[in-house]
Structure formats: C-alpha cells, structure tokens
Amino acid sequence: MMTNSHNQILSQHYKLYNTVIKPLIATYEAREQKFPTPIFNEIRAFTDHIARCYIDNAEDDFITKQLSRAGRLSITKLARFLKKNSSNL
Image (cartoon, rainbow, N blue to C red):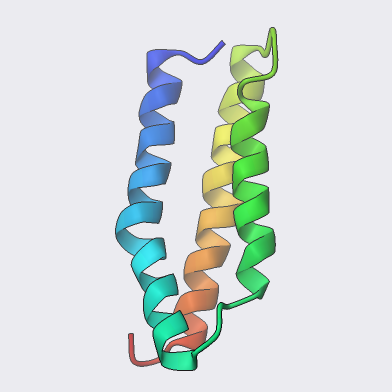
C-alpha cells in the first residue's frame, strides 16, 4: 500500500516531469515540428512502474523499487534524450 513517503517520491517524479521534462518536450516539438517518438516508450515505462505501485497487496519494498525505477530509468532517459537532441534548449 502506498504510504506518505511513497506519495512524496511520486510527487517529486511528477514535479520533475511537469517542470523539466514536459517543457523540454514542448520546446523540442515546437522546434522540430514533430513529437520525439523515442520518448513514447519512456513515458509508457514511467506510467507502468507507477501503476505497479497500486497493485493490491503490494509490499513496501516492491513499491519502493517501482518508484525508483520510474525515476531512474524513465525520467532520466527522457531528460538525456531531450538534452542530447535539443542542443539549444
């Protein structure tokens, strides 16, 4: 079950997405006139890890790992892709 600590981590992930990743995507999309398609998989992975946190009877360790993976794997990859492919952002 999600705890207050888990919710704080989740809130940090969404804050990073909304304040850093989302504006980078919008800027990339405006400059390139296309959505950066490699990002679709990372967004899917991010939401999949978050969804796993809400599986019935999920234990604390499992939820903590999923939140870590959502942040480490998905958000980090999104940021790297956008920075690499948007040199003037």
